[in-house]
Image (cartoon, rainbow, N blue to C red; front, side):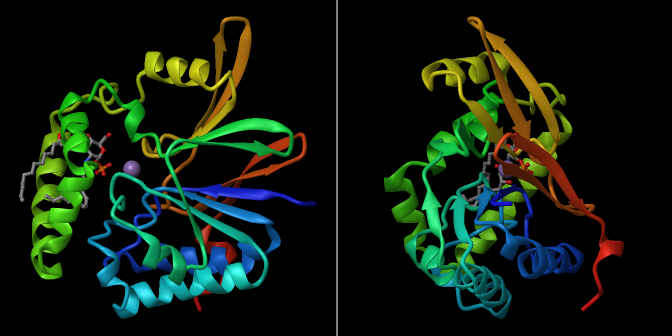
Length: 248
Ligand code: LP5
Ligand code: MN
């Protein structure tokens, strides 16, 4: 049956080899049956710039996605809050299309809005201030002029600060703000919504102005590979426990 797969928050890094194994298993054995694979942000633990494409670790990831694309699945990649510096060279290396966040699509007849999800966490004012600064093109161009090693060192500092600040933020502050979700749904004429970021996989129903909108929240890959599988009139969770695939 023709279907599309939605994944997010893999946070791929050399430091988490088991997640990398999950990624390769999924891309080689599961994804080729789909007509489209949507990666809705945070594919990487972080992305310091497209001049980091040649590292052996990144070559393995981009080659896997490029092969998937050559097998016939369309590959779409959206920025997350960790990898918003991904650009055209990365997309080309993956034979993928970069999606602008948020984006609407017709998903087997259901109008569907895709977003990473971080922009909806409006109660997290410290994060939103940081986001506004680093999503600015002038700021990004200046940052990308720094040597790669210096960028990575700064990112490590921000990661450490983010981790320490998260200790003092409540779970509700770090979740999406329901008013922000409702506004986005109203603005886009009440679509279905698919997002990640919060690492709280769930299916929510939003009742707004006489409409019922589905909101699917994707899970991270810290414990197992997982995806949202969508086909005509059917949306299901697909999970792939590590035991279900061979080590190599
Ligand atoms: O990612 P996650 O889920 O752990 O946390 C996010 C929010 N944190 C972030 C930061 C990213 O994890 C790391 C950034 C990688 C980007 C790479 C490119 C650009 C680098 C710029 C370098 C100068 O997104 C976290 C949210 C959480 O989601 C839940 O929604 O709470 O937000 C924060 O914790 C942000 C802090 O509140 C504010 C951070 C201020 C950083 C100030 C920089 C100080 C050091 C500067 C050194 C140059
Ligand atoms: Mn995220």
